[in-house]
Amino acid sequence: MVNLDDVKRARNEIAGMIHKTPVLTSSLLNGRTGNQIYLKSEHLQKTGSFKIRGAANAVKQAVKEGAEFITAASSGNHGQAVAYIADQLGVPAAIVVPEDANRAKVSAIEGYNGKVIYCGLTSAERIPKATQLAEENNGIYIPPYDHPHVIAGQGTLGLELLEQVADLDIIVVPIGGGGLISGILIAIKGINPDIRVIGVEPDTANDTYLSLANKHITAISRTSTIADGLRTSQPGQLTFPILQEYLDDLVLVTEEEIKEAFQFMLERTKQLVEPSGAAAVAAMLAGELGVHGKKIAIVLSGGNVDLKQIQTFLPE
Ligand SMILES: *Cc1c(COP(=O)(O)O)cnc(C)c1O
Image (cartoon, rainbow, N blue to C red):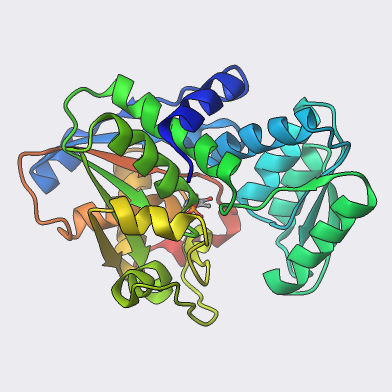
């Protein structure tokens, strides 16, 4: 299992490749929720999401191991992060995206000099393609969450947060495949196990919630939450045991609650946070945590939004 030393090593490896993102506050949010809220702002991170932390650590290790080519299978934030980092390290990258990938995301990957390869409509088709391309080109395929270097990289967010905010009571984190929260759990529980770490999933993408309840990895069928970074159908082989061991609680939010949080962030705090990134705010605003007078960090995990879609992210 990934440990605290792996996360500390990752931090040294990726220092200088990523931003130390700011922690924002909002007195309105404090007033609304009755807590002191700290917004860890990964929407202001390079490439627009925390995914660059894991990508930087994993791609750097791959290059050290002799990889001459990097591949990933994601049209989203992971694909962008891997393309950007490979470009920074001077290694060619191919990013396999679905045939219906949205133009804005494809342009972002191309903007980082990643070669875009279209393949099928599901990750079951894309992953073998990305793996095969890596094999053919003396390269390494970088998965989005279920990889020790990716998890350790995401954990650097936890180390940073502990330095930025003293005496935290709770950290709230959105869950897709669980790479982000696994890394944070390892960092936080290794340093101060009294800090509670709470995960958030959309109620329509509750695979981790079901897996924890069933005590084994449980897959759900394709879902359509607006929080596209949280649509994963099941937690990972590596991430799930970490969640089972350390996670304090997991709360579910509705689509409408995510939309209200998206609107709140944009209208009130002037921050453009993508729906996945607003999920933890949604849990807070909806009172799902049931706490008052606490110091709470909320992870705003990303801010990549196709502006043409904004209308569909707003409440009815
Ligand atoms: C990938 C992603 C998540 C989920 O992270 P996991 O490591 O898959 O749990 C959350 N928010 C955003 C913006 C993402 O891109």
